[in-house]
Length: 205
Image (tube, rainbow, N blue to C red; front, side):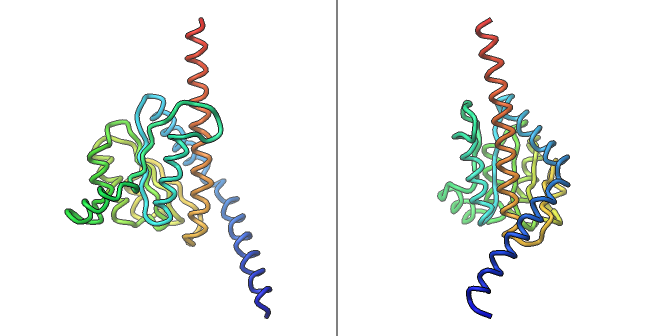
């Protein structure tokens, strides 16, 4: 078999797996609707969204936080959205002084208030530091959302809503998390745009 045919096989297999998994996300519609409602209610009442994850999921956390602070598709005001993965001084201090398992929970303790939403991303659902973050968020009377892989892992017990991608492959799970995250951002755009239009109409009247 030639190198080019091997590459073509990788290309075809990856696309096939990706499309199949994305199609199977239809089974997550109820969970998605619940997650979108939690997040929309959160921002409409002036609360904030905190995101956390490790590795590629840390990048996803930063990505989604940026979409909300900046903009996604529609003009709207900035939303209070924070990735707990970005401050290297905090990350290294907490890891050094406490433990890596507390690296997100300590930030939740400092920043989270009742009514906020903490979103934890983990392809396995078993990362100790994201589990600790959701556990602490619950103690602080915040709402919790998990974005995981097929099993949901230990995160399920700490999540008000769990979006479980039907796959065990971390790469495919992270791709699906991007799709789900963009869909959630779209829902928040719509909710905020409608609210701002309503307020503007009220001001005119």
